[in-house]
Image (cartoon, rainbow, N blue to C red; front, top):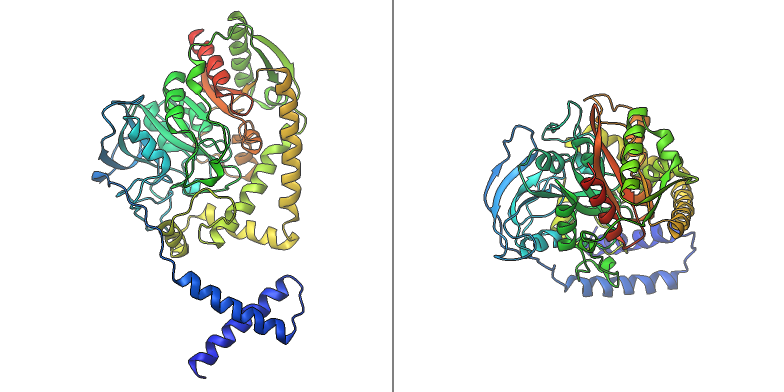
Length: 483
């Protein structure tokens, strides 16, 4: 068959397939008209050249060799001479781009070295921070223990159990004092869970306030980037350095820029917080007791604490899992392109996703992709729609409570760091995200602060209204200073 006939048939077949998708019956005249428009559009698009983002690459890039397996790569990249983070050493998670440093997302299937920095990497450097390297993580950020990382599990410096995930290396690096702060990402709790298990501070910002250009999404309607740090002041300072709109992430357009450090000098006396009954009821006794002791300390600082109910709280981890599965499987099927969300696009990352060696994917991600895709096909994504509707109802509930209270307080995790190998079933996994994932669904800022131990570290979580990170910081500081 002549080449022209093959091309002609290809367009015709594509037109027929598209019409079938939408249940349309086409006339011959429509098919001819659509063919002409497609040919003209393809000619126009072929004239465009890919946008190349370039940054000064990191130097002295070597594989990480620390005793906790916290670092995937070490590197040297000096920040500005001055700024709020001047002289501090920071690291970023392996799903955040650093020019010249391979980015794997914790997977053996990806071969990608970005030529550009993520928006947050640039902002760290502009604020004076020195980039020390990239940190290990659960594969594609889709687990909570570090055990699915293709580069080996991470060790918790402060407990016998797992360090938490998926920002495992960032949590361990901070807890071990290898860096002054690190960036993690949070889809269902992946900043706050390592913070809780490792006994450090983790801060998930308000949704869309931190730009995600140069970050590899897991589930774009749930993903956040934020800091892990040894104390509240450091976490607030790093968060303030990286937040605010970015032109390469249109989802940040028009979004207010919170000032977390405004809470550092604020007295918590007079604030009112609601202690979430469902979270306390779900927590292990020792964890619930630690949170009760933390609220006693807050009351001594002048904070009013009252028990509140959040109907639907206990179903939100399953809702989060359903949304994550649907969005990740779609993202992977489209080679990393989530059309319409506007978190910023990189041709380089898309090519890496399109050409990844799927046979090298770990068991967890393989299962999530196949099961998630099959579920979506089986019900024509009705489950995703139902999950999103349930999500909105729960956000309304949280907003109503925050009309009466300055913050909600609850355990960051209902358990302390579990043993390696003990998170095996879906129920086990959902338990690790039981108290964090609801607030990825609602988008509210959430700060995890150490509040004691129940054998291992326990985290206390403060959830505040959208864009009110400062109140969470004030409460976190009050808790720190009362210890």
